[in-house]
Image 1 (cartoon, protein in one colour):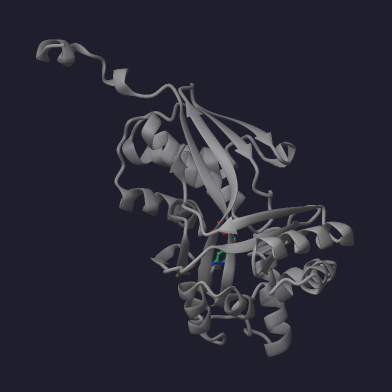
Image 2 (image 1 turned 90 degrees about the horizontal axis):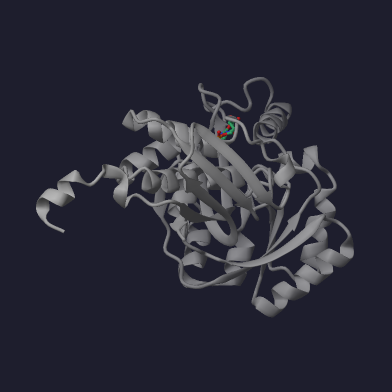
Amino acid sequence: MNASESVLEPASASLPDSVTVRVPAKVNVQLAVGGRRADGFHALATVFFAVGLWDTVTARPGRGVTLTVSGRDADVVPTDDSNLAARAALALAAHHGVEANVALHIDKDIPVAGGMAGGSADAAAALLACDVLWGLGTDRETLFGLAADLGSDVPFSMHGGVALGEGRGERLTPVPVGGTFHWVFAVADGGLSTPAVYGECDRLREEAGGPGGADESRVPQPSADAALLDALASGDAAALGAALGNDLQPAALSLRPALARTLRAGTEAGAIGALVSGSGPTCAFLAKDAGAAAAVAAALVKSGTCREVRLTEGPVPGATLA
Ligand code: C5P
């Protein structure tokens, strides 16, 4: 081809027919919740950890933004503009002043409303997939900014690995990790609403500390746990298990008392750490190796205290073109 031919080529000639992005779930190995801020969010020091349960988002040319969903619990995932993936496509298009034309398809494997950032994962994947489909070449900083506007967990879904999240969770610093960790997740029947769990956390704090007891002025500023960061850096599963912590756990247990039995069943089966994942209701168990994880999973199935049990490892990378 000579130069004049290439000039006549339509701009879209090199754009793909379809873009697929794989994106992982997360568990917060630390979730330290500070006081309620004036904007209603809570100051966090949280250590996000990406685990190998994946949603897959495919973007194809379309008219307007349309969304279809397949896979686990597809029937309870909204397919209108309330879905964070659709909002991600609209936000990216608006940022660039282009028309939002895309047919998105989500194949779900991350538990829905389970405290594992499934909706945030889909938003991160949709941002990346639309960016490539539309040939926008958005720089990383802008993509992360758009991600943060969509939700507190969306930047981490792009980032993956392990990272400390500050602010409302959107300000990330990578955390070094010295090994692979083995996880078991007990998926509960039905989800929990994240705002409801934060609200219950505030209510419990006010119950204990009186009026204003949940406010920023009264709750200490949260900070990362040095023992937990050391355990991650050295790949020490036992030390990580001992350091796991989630300030939202009392609130999740208050709203869903049956989770206490799930946590007990996994601990009695040999888990070296157990906690509610994010705002729940999924419970996360750390095992010392793959064999121990299989034993914990089998015991959880037998206990009848959860709907489904998932085994996986981490950390894994964030949203990635497939
Ligand atoms: O940021 P995102 O939209 O995921 O947050 C959902 C809800 O969770 C917020 O509306 C708020 O009620 C609660 N939240 C919070 N503090 C945070 C993150 C989330 O109170 N740091």
